[in-house]
Length: 343
Ligand code: TRP
Ligand code: SF4
Image (tube, rainbow, N blue to C red; front, side):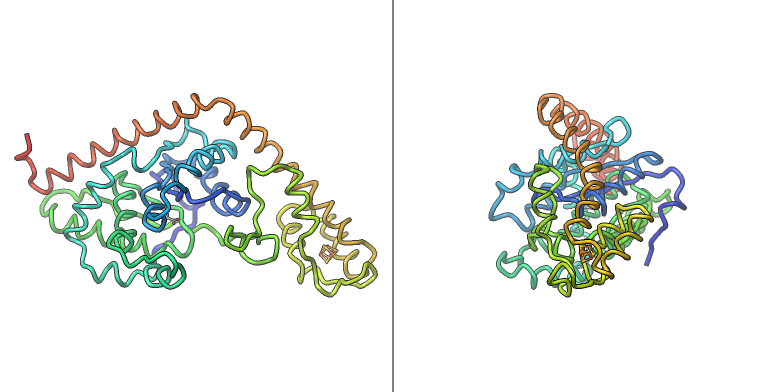
């Protein structure tokens, strides 16, 4: 397995994508976007909306992409993804991704794709979607094309995506071996930059996910967030106000661990275990921090959303930069495949 500690990497080329399939929530922010923010300060980053990847599972409901893609891009910019530092683009605006995917498909053994663990897992988990398709099997290979197109050195991913980066390394190796004999390899083998598992759970203590209906959306109104937190479950042992509780058995505590000060956490520990504070007091303390984090993001969101033409220009420019890089790579790829006969 090839994983790298982010802090050990000096300036590299980084690429990552996100599928536009729903509204972004706090889990995306704390688990993924904060990581991207850190990377864009040090590295040449490419961040893209993986709309074709969304269609591999949502082909029967393609509207989900148009309904969510611009909101997702707004969220990226609202949290601080900076188009001056990172190239922000839309996958399908760079059709070279499809061409590279096709050329890779010729040299990729079926067995490499069939053994990717997410393949069978997802078919099982998303039974209602019929993922026994050609395109879904090729999902990780399309991802390899995304990555190798920009000759990325590092790809920030969650644990589940590591096999996709492994596949990408094998594809790079195979391409270099088949077509670059005696000349310098074209594709570097990218590293997985493993993002630490999310510290912040969903409102019910399980992983934050829209399918569990336990999220705090980045774009929702503060009133809604407040209401969700006030009604979120706490330690079930605290049935009445004077029942003592155990913070470790309560999802509110996980939020305190992320947001609150040392002194506040001591106050929670003491107050909860002796029943000297109520759960509402405890939640109010946490909410104050949550508001301080979310309000500026929501203000920026509103501002970006109010200037849709500027947003489109930003993404158009990102698409152009990505296409420029992609066309350079594809020229080399076509040359490697002896396609100089084209006029
Ligand atoms: N498969 C990724 C996910 O589900 C999204 C993605 C598509 C991606 N192409 C990528 C991530 C390239 C990193 C690099 O999260
Ligand atoms: Fe949870 Fe806080 Fe209530 Fe304790 S006091 S059960 S930590 S909400």
